Length: 284
Image (cartoon, rainbow, N blue to C red; front, side, top):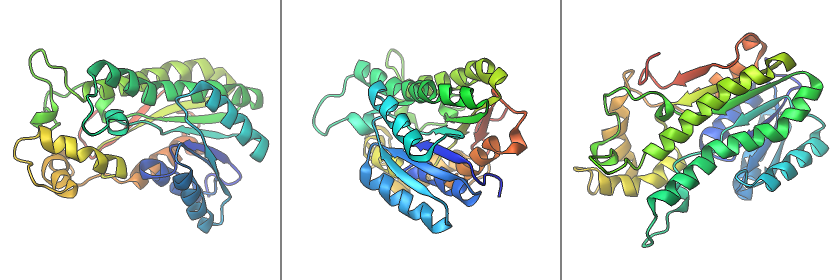
């Protein structure tokens, strides 16, 4: 096993991509500190990881809040003694967490919420864990970005109703900008921490059908001509999956395996890099 006796912290590890990452890390021998804002999800995921015979513990924190981040990192260190791996997985399109039915959700608030949920959480967790990694002169950090943060291809992969037109800003643009920030943050932090034997890399998922994606579909249905009456799965299969050149969606475990590579000794001389796991949607 590639990660035996390593301790990994995964934010947003209670469901979706985060749970898949935890599963892959555990299969390779890592013990887990699963951080999630939802206690039930964190505890359920920790219990599932224990079936692999690895140790796993649930920790509850809102990683958009700096005080809560500092608290939970200290709590983890007190409980398990050290941290070898940090995976910053928390993120998403904030409107699908914050928007309330029947209430206006303003564009400016969407930008603030999305940058905080994706980019700020990544910075806060890195800042809190870095002193420990520097002291032990080793560590691996993987930030989860998105192909939405890669340079636009011009192919317009999003369904037409989810793109901006004229003076209208795309409702997906704040997400892409935040994820692009994570990619840049990864590169600059990797240079800063290289002298301390700490690797920092980024994985960019493509299209995955997760609980968060399912939650987003009602708004997507409203914005996409021809999608009326579709179930979330029908929408994904009709408008999203066909945009993948390999003609198949990605899974949380696909992302998890890429993370395992980056945090293993196989990638000891790789840092500051971003890997797309997207079935060829954004080449290069």
